[in-house]
Length: 232
Image (cartoon, rainbow, N blue to C red; front, side, top):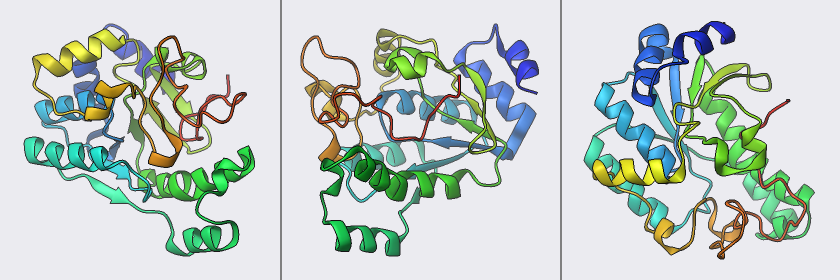
């Protein structure tokens, strides 16, 4: 199946990839958005294509105010339902009660525990029952993501993942945003190329890696929370 999809989408542009997925999988497609610029591009394309794909976001409880701002603007512009998935209340209460609200700063293990509770487990619920998961991942976002492919099998989640703008550059994304008047997070104009939870994200300095602002205290980390992993 993966080889067939790769072959049939190899020469297609991003919008045509989405149309292809819609035609082949119809209402068995889900798209995850964190309201970053890449995801905003995909949301715009889904709206333009009249896609039946379901859209969801992970409401970790630790988002920036600016993220809520672009979330509202996105709803206003595209009139598409975006389902919010929250962490399990009991799991959050237990974590914070036992380790405090900032345990993720203390060790990689603690940070991954927080990411699992606030992101991974809700994600697993969000994609359950779907055959295809569309994302806004681009290859140049990190070395780990360069190891991915535009179409791949996610073994951990047992789902096909498709990244329509995988080969786009940052300039491609920014140009598309401007040309189509797409709302985006104002933090992107303040040195935040990658935006996650507020306590775990800072602006990137000139010359730093794209994801240096994520979990910046972890010098040897791959800068991934576990949502998107590769087994290559």
